[in-house]
Image (spheres, helix red, strand yellow):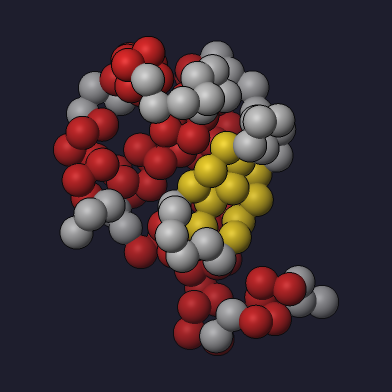
Length: 114
């Protein structure tokens, strides 16, 4: 049975959704363990304006569109969202936490703007 997203997603984009559902929960678990942080759930969405988000309850959403980018960019978004489980802002401490686990995050972030 198809869920709402699958039902309304054009057939040509479904491989991206499948890849996102396979890869993003796995990467989130891997980096959460590395960073020593906890999160609620992982959800894949069709968001067009942002690649990821983290709720106040530490539930993380990723857009399947992220799958069109290199793995380095995808990993950056995962670490970025996990950093929000500690710092719910974009403060210096937030970016210092990202840099601790991904020193090249600025280069990775640039990949998302191409």
